[in-house]
Length: 295
Image 1 (cartoon, helix red, strand yellow):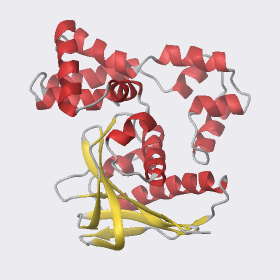
Image 2 (image 1 turned 90 degrees about the horizontal axis):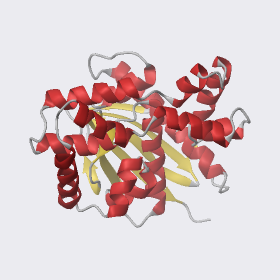
Image 3 (image 1 turned 180 degrees about the vertical axis):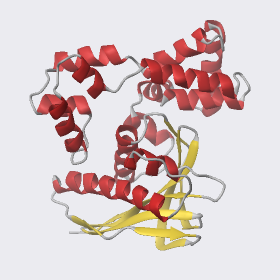
Image 4 (image 1 turned 30 degrees about the horizontal axis):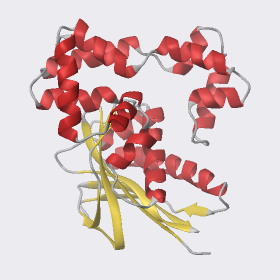
C-alpha cells in the first residue's frame, strides 16, 4: 500500500522512472509472501486449515492471523513469528529503492519529507500509510462526519487488500448527485439500512478489470458483461461481510440482484460518495450510499 502512495509520488515528480518503479514492485512481490503460504510452508497450518480460514474470510471482516487465533489453529506468538517472516511492505519498498539504485538513503529521506508536506499528511497519517492501517489514514481522504460511510468504505478497502491485491492507493473522495461512468457493477441493499455499493470505470480506464481478474482468479481482456459479473460477485461478497457486521448491532439488511450497466448516469434522491481507487496503478471508482432507517 505504501509503495503505491509513495512510489507514484516519486513517478509524478520524476524522481524515479516507470522502469525503476516496476523493478521495485517486482522486488517487493518476490520478497513478500502471503501469511497463509508461509504458515503452510512452515508446517504451522495444513492445507485444509488454510482453505477453511480463507473461506471464513468471506464471512468475517478479520485478518487471516486473527481468524487463525480465533479458530485455535495458531497462537499469538505463532502469528507474530509469521508476520516477522513476511516482512514489512514499507521497509521492503525502501530497501527496493536502495538495492535497485533508484535513490540513496538521503534522497529517500528528503523525498519522504517532501511527500508528506506536499500531501499535507500529519505524522499519524504518514505512519498509518506506512503500516497499511486503513482505519487511521482513511479520514484524510474521506471527508464525511458519517462514521457509517467510513466503516463501509474501510471494510471495502480491506476486502480489496485481502482478496484482490495489497498494492492499492486511494485519492480524495467527494459526494455527488449524479455520476456518468462507462460501466458499473453495483448492488443495492435494503432493510434497516438502504443504499448501494459498486465499482465503476471510465472508457479510458480498465481498473474494474483488476477487481474482476483478482476475484475470479482469471484474466479478462476487456470490460464486458463477464468481467462486470465477476466484479459484481466481489461486491456481493463485501455486502455480505457488511451485513454480517451490522447483524451484531441488530441491524438487518437484504441484498438485491447485482446491476451491470454500461454508459448510463447514476442519480439518486440524495448525494452518494465517489472514491477513486487505484489497484496496482489501475484506476476505478468506488461508489457508495448508506441511509439507516430510524427505529
